[in-house]
Length: 334
Image (cartoon, rainbow, N blue to C red; front, side, top):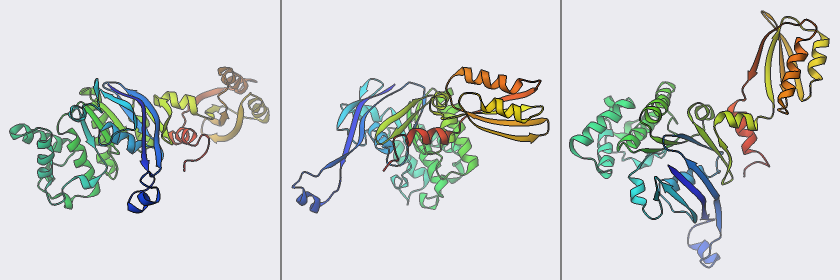
């Protein structure tokens, strides 16, 4: 379990000698995390989302003990990350989007041997793990290729292989499918959800800008905005809580002006659009999520006067709509 409590982090507004002279050694600082608190359960796939500048990267670096907070605590499986960062590092694997963390003149195998040795692996155990993780990300045939000869997608897959090398119980994945071709990206998503989380029971924090990916894979999502958690919960709950309008597709056997008037009279209805379909008329309705009674009244309105309702379908909100509503509440990010 990962517990983050009241986490704060700030950075100087500028670096160098001149700012030090200008501010007499007391350079003003800009706070990028404002008291972040969250809990990630063991065996959970937890999504971390937010617009650029929201604080996702800073939070990940703090979770990985790559930097220290100004205040607050991080506890990983009962271990205080500030007091015992080495013990925390032993429990995590990081898939970073930073290519410069590899050695360009070394082959993929040599890079994995180096990072595996840092994780305490050696001999046959290291060799077997390299073969295994390379097979999982479909890089077996490229292990003897220098990293400089890898495409962007291959480099990202090698980063995923490195994260899995030590078989850590906790994985931090920073845009693991970035620049990866669609086939391998889908394979990596299945690997994360079905193998690493569902079968092996690993705890995974996934930071991504691909909203459909996050909504499809994650058990819960934290959406960040300006250094705070703007929304937290399962994707379905976020859909229900933050959707501005509910959308329904209603297919009826026929339509007339009286039907449209009855639908428009239902409390909360904002839009009514009709279109012909092979088995009748489709009535597309947008309605404010005021109460369940409005839906009952909507169904009654379309079924009056002998109208036959052939189907009544709810259109789930698109992730982009929910994400935009959450992150732009109160104004745009700077």
